[in-house]
Length: 302
View 1 (tube, helix red, strand yellow):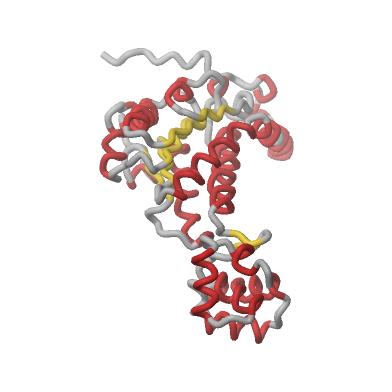
View 2 (cartoon, one colour):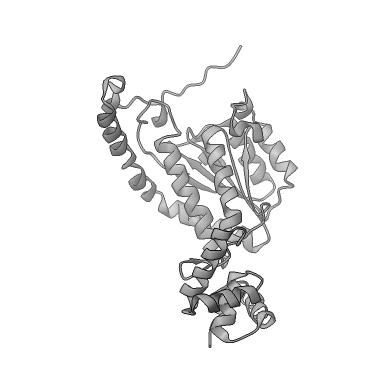
């Protein structure tokens, strides 16, 4: 016999008074109403900025100690973590091992619900053990409800090995908050469609994951001014973007940017330092290594 799960106190499960007659509305009215609900997300995230900033500092510290950022969640929450992890690779030129997304039930759960996976307190620890989790890593447990057993089990295990623990929930006083050093809670109010946390809750989670990964990457030198200087030029579009970045960062012409990139083996950072300092590839790489990969520090004094 299954234990009864009480969801009555969760904001994300309450009915929205503004959308009670949703099935009777015109498409135009429903779209307007949905847009109005979505506008509540960013202000809700704003209230959690102090906790988000603290989480970013934990992640930067993990990266600086050779650790990883590991997202874990179930359903939509897990998929959003996997998405953010995957996008870090081309955007910031990191390995796929540096930012990892875990979803309850494994890869198949990205497209098909895996029965019972999110209700397991042991699957989370198992997934982290398979990654050889260490005290240098940072684990972000994501759960819109704030009560997902898969996430709770993972956060408990992460804490037991000394890893940094961060929780992200879309309900106040979330259960997962008790198991994290830094607890991020956002309350966007009841969903447009009752209980559909892929909507406002999912949007809030996406905004926050964008912040966690982007600000952490800025903190370890992946950005110069506001440019993606570690982008990997793996296709024609990205090669052109790389040239534009070198031009914007240095003021050189298109032809010069192309030349520097060719000399730098398509490393945007190296090309920028070469152009800014008049050095060759090897000298520019030495400057970057001495500056821990920060372009601005590499060109100081020139």
